[in-house]
Amino acid sequence: MGARLFRVLAVPVILILLWQGFSMLGYVRPAILPSPVAIIERLWLYLLPGQSFAESTGVLDWLQSSELLSDMFASLHRVVLGFVVGAGLALPLGLLMGTDRRVEGLLDPLVQFLRPIPPIAYIPLAILWFGLGDPPAIFLIAIGAFFPVLINTITGVRNVDSIYVRAATNLGAGRMTMFRRVILPAATPYILTGMRIGIGTAFIVVIVAEMIAVNSGLGYRILEAREYLWSDKVIAGMIAIGTLGLAIDVGVNRLNNHLLRWHRGIES
Amino acid sequence: MSNMFPSPTPSQDETTRLPQVRAVGVNKIFGREPGAVTALKDIDLEIAAGEFVCLLGPSGCGKSTLLNAIAGFALPTSGTLEVCGKPITAPGPDRGMVFQEYALFPWMTVEQNVAFGLEIRGLSKVQIAEAVDRLLETLGLREFRRRYPKDLSGGMRQRVAIARVLALDPPIMLMDEPFGALDALTRRSLQDELLRLWQAVGKTIVFVTHSIEEAVYLGSRVVILTYRPGTIKRDIRIELPYPRDSNSAAFNEIKKELAQMVHAEHDRFALDERQGLTLD
Ligand SMILES: Nc1ncnc2c1ncn2[C@@H]1O[C@H](COP(=O)(O)OP(=O)(O)OP(=O)(O)O)[C@@H](O)[C@H]1O
Ligand SMILES: [Mg+2]
Image (cartoon, rainbow over all chains, first blue to last red; front, side, top):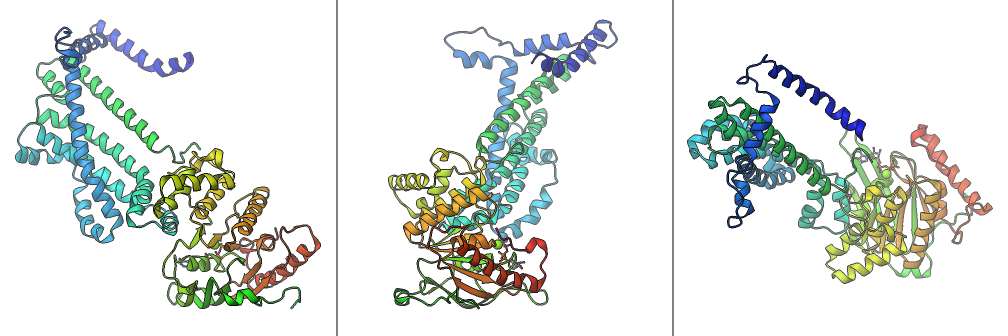
């Protein structure tokens, strides 16, 4: 345990110590690259709630008065909303395109054409259509989540082993049962992979969207900090973005493992 | 021709009832000329209720094709194929299929797999629970009921596949090399269980195998198919009483006799080792 912890932490700790040393010796200007200690101090200030805890307003208000937490909440909120919209449209469409060749034939050319356009390229249109604020951000995030979920759902349905369909037919399954209890679960490994990629894309897009279209969230905050030349806060914000991204990925991974507990993994 | 194998003449009570499965001049051709494969050619076959018919033949001779046609998955190119006097047009719950590759639903636990067909049939929760309990008990799966297929051995999986089909109580069971991938001991114990079930509930079983030993151990009748095109070479009644002793002289005599017929077929096409038949 101790040895393992050492192996994991050795390189980062050495690098941070070196960095701190150089900063203290004055080799780098703080405005270009602040020292680790300064960043941690700034992160702490960023996290600290702005108001003291009061019974009357409750814990939630108190937590929200922390700039960092309210930024994280704002970004997460947008990711979830945008993801729900994007994946919510992509999933049924993907299921339909995966099962119905005709629908697939009609829509596939359009999908193939739109798919390579990065969500970022929709920014001007998004602002033209929705103005500033949350709507264009949600729109961009939804586009980011839409295509990975769509493509993976189609592939998942396509790859359902026909032996399951035969077995279910033999046991008397009709169209609805086949769809709900055979095709959908058989395709879940692919669908969940698509969702994982989709939520990752959504997280990238939310940062960009916040830099451009809204006045809150982690993406907005680091751009704002740059205007004041607070490079320590920029890096503190980046650390927060990384932590939130990691937390989302771990959470989604846990959920996947639970939903796919029946699936024969690589290790078994 | 040996007089050890009387040709299957229907006994008194069999003539009075319709054959459960009837094939007349069944052909199945895959693909188009040139390069079309005649998998089945002029198959005439009548299977009476309560028979245990083993389809025996080398790999690729069309055993699965015939079984799939009876199951209704892939209809014949020409000819008549009937179940209980009605032409086969689609899969039906009267013909339960146990697949070569088990085909359990991996996202369902053992009990969910077994309950699946009953739920579709619209039975009440209580009825389903009772039926599932009984089947799991019969097949020795009780302790494994909440496991997923990935956590079962091959023998266990095959038991679940059998239980899943038995749940619907089909009069006809179609089994495609169900024990092919099992070790000898597991295989024998499942064969014995299958025989017990067959004798207890009186089902008609069509059982595909390429093991001569297995065919002689199980079948009340063995149908030998030829390779390319798949035709019926011999149709033999095995009169040995159950349970059969695979070490007895009579058993081995029959086995040898069948092996000669099958190997004659084998040599005719000089099939390679992969497609060969095994004696055990
Ligand atoms: N869908 C298909 N398209 C073309 N040819 C096929 C198809 N299915 C089967 N065949 C051919 O038909 C022949 C019979 O196949 P079948 O699967 O019935 O053999 P089998 O007796 O079950 O063999 P095995 O013991 O290996 O399972 C084979 O030569 C095979 O190549
Ligand atoms: Mg086969």
